[in-house]
Length: 187
Image (cartoon, rainbow, N blue to C red; front, side):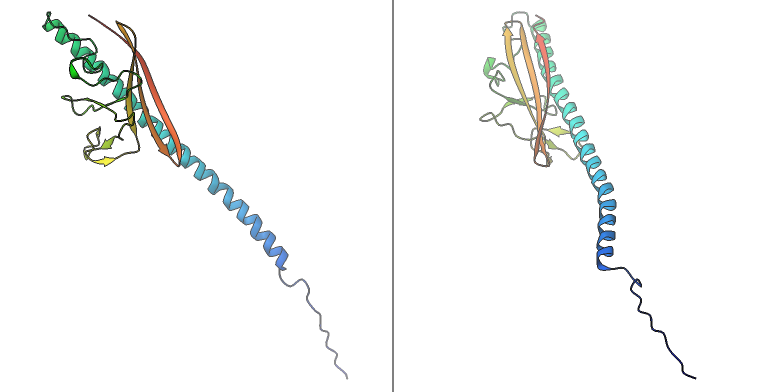
């Protein structure tokens, strides 16, 4: 009796190199897609967060300008012989800073004794965040990415347009929010 052995060569026993590369490519595309979507969503949420903060900072700056105008009104009511301008503290009268266009000023809502300062060469310094989480212009605390500026354009003796602009840079892209209001002389 003669025994014969059959040897079969198994051509399809494993994956070929091409099949492996195709599988890796498909898996990579399947994984990269969701990661890209998550990254885009995170970038969008960071931008929305910054827009919200910038809008609040711009509105806060506008409220400070209105506060100064209101204090001028109260001062003139209490002192009828006063010649104080209704924009005193904002228009350069009496040695105060002038925020008249094209000049820019900063507004510090945490320092009511000297809330207005002129930006040097049209460049305003960034806002800082104090340890009590208040934004300030006094460079007390951590410097932030936000810069706030105020520009006033007088359209008549009793009317002025106030623009408060907050700018910042995020991921090498500049952003800005501007709040505009027309103030009138109550006197």
